[in-house]
Image (cartoon, rainbow, N blue to C red; front, top):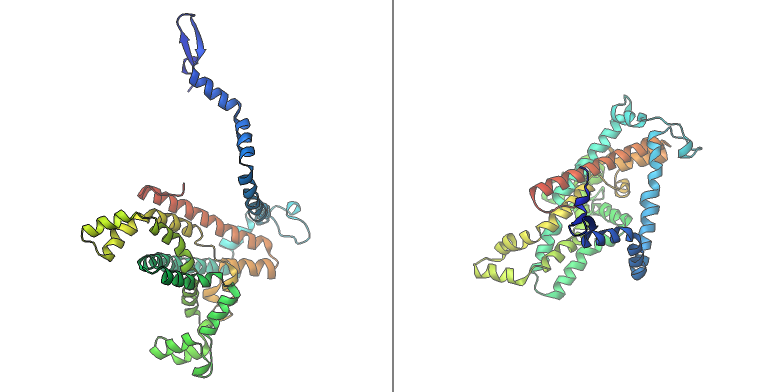
Length: 350
């Protein structure tokens, strides 16, 4: 739609001409000296921007500059030539992964299925646990006891992946005798959940037990640390809300249901969207340390697939294409989850 002079100017009947309104003059001045205002703001708060500089450097070096290597997805891999000088192959690598006739496509689809299954089970069983822990922490009246319990649940997060996987393997290790088995294997065999032969052979050598071990160890590792966000949202609830619920006769469970959970619902939605965004981002470190040739069928994920073909097989184009497809699917999941959250409630990331 075309703009007219009357939209920005005021007609002066005395002089018979148009003049600029005071509001428009202010807007014109702001637009004219916009970058001057920005520069003055930066100079005024230069300490804050100086603190922001390390984060920008980290994002540039580890997030934006590596995007240049994504060109390898569309080029013929050559270990001698740089990516910019390699021959363009279009979507050839993606066709090999999605519709190839060899074992490459079969392994990729198996890795993608395992990635989704592990992530989905981790979301279903792992996401509610921090919320439950935060609710229980809120009910502990002693500050000393609550601090001790919180520290005990936070500790696994600060252990390295190697230490964590070593503990898991010790707990479920195999043994020719009962005394040589891990304590978890002994307990499961004692209650009859697994046979004595399966426990002796080692739970990590059985494909059916890899996913439960991976998911349970992940919950043990991160549930306490992830509860910090929800516990912070809970303690921010006004005490008057609890008092009003008590006057209405609400007990502890009713207060959790009708006061606490609705108050932290926005935090839960935001955390759920971010968790869905990383649904397919399973790091290769933990899987690589836990799986073996016996559990390959249920343990191989996209990251280990890319590590195997990119480093061991020297097929960087295939590895880059696999990781790029994984990240694109994750981005689509974030967009979809955010759209659903925005339509179902007033809370969303953007």
